[in-house]
Image (cartoon, rainbow, N blue to C red; front, top):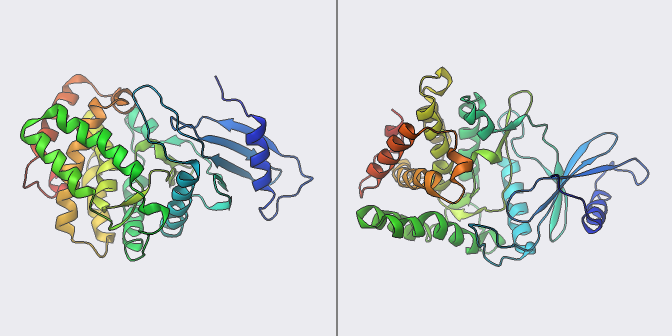
Length: 336
């Protein structure tokens, strides 16, 4: 069932839209609510005679099955998303803009330019396809984003808040570490403990394959910066690579998956500046192993890995467990 557009959201949307240059009070405007995921946000597609826009409003978190998000205000979440998306919009450029530009905003919402989309990366991976721009463009842009935000002081901004980051660490690191136990659990816990101290740059924070979209021309686009925070490049790198790794194993016979992980890592480190590659690469290996375990065992595992068969699952989990050591390999070795 499609979501309904309530009056409060409609009025909020129109009030922000009026502040955008070129939008007339008299021109016809059509608004349609869009499915907004699990975090109780509101997203509206806006159509004028000339353009399409997207309005996103943040609301109070609500508890849902398998998730109990922290009590973070809508204002805080909107501030984080706007700061990170604006920073990314300036740096995620590789011949075209990879992140939609924010055109108007207030304390709890913003309107951004529309992305004509043919679907997200997970749609493609489920069907055994991996568009070329995933490895030709995305790693360069991601590395530039991490490099460019390294030199700026965001600690005193809303991006310095750790509440959402710590919730994700509890869900994806500390809880699995307790369940696994033993040496592997100790290493995951130590990884999370170390990550809590890192403030090296802005990270997207949720660079999963549903937040990577494609235009009809095949260009890659990145959205949804609500979970952005200050951390290490290794976090984002491992997040997206975990799903590429799983898909590459599931569809190993497909030519377009050959070299996907290796090419992504190679091109990422070619563009990364201001960081020690060996440190980031070994951290990323541990994050990758943990994220693979989470993709198969977390509360949303059916979303991420329902297309993966049992033999592939067993091999992926075994390999991930083997990577959890005190001296992990450079992440490129995993894909070589």
